[in-house]
Image 1 (cartoon, helix red, strand yellow):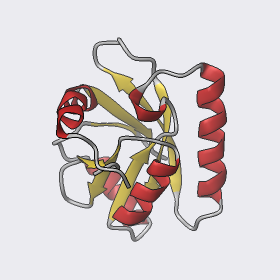
Image 2 (tube, helix red, strand yellow):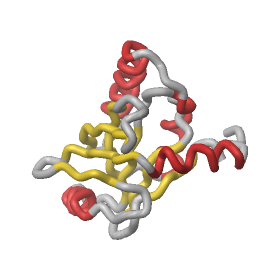
Image 3 (cartoon, rainbow, N blue to C red):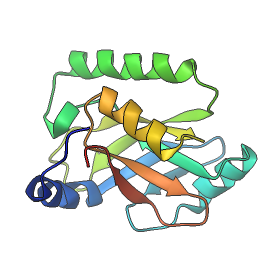
Image 4 (cartoon, rainbow, N blue to C red):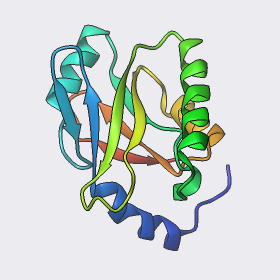
Length: 145
């Protein structure tokens, strides 16, 4: 994977942190925030005997806005790939706090390894995914290192 320049990573860090990663769990909705725990997601991971979860989208590759149609096609392709994997998943939406970025469809996937998450996100030209480890705070996992 190509190395992401530090200047770009620094510029993208703030917008990623100013986003709510909303996931629609079977019994509740939880807004995941970078640097904060996600107890409802922890309970969902427990139900699936998983120690990790990843919030991933295929929308707006490389943090550049694309058309609704292009994002829909990309998200369908991501969903198709994930359906072929043995990991539980649920829908979500990424919502910018300032409302200056369009909401993005996303998925939360239990049980992906860091490598799997990075490879899958790289395939859809994403800069980062939200990484959750049971009992820990949500963090950004940069795809392009």
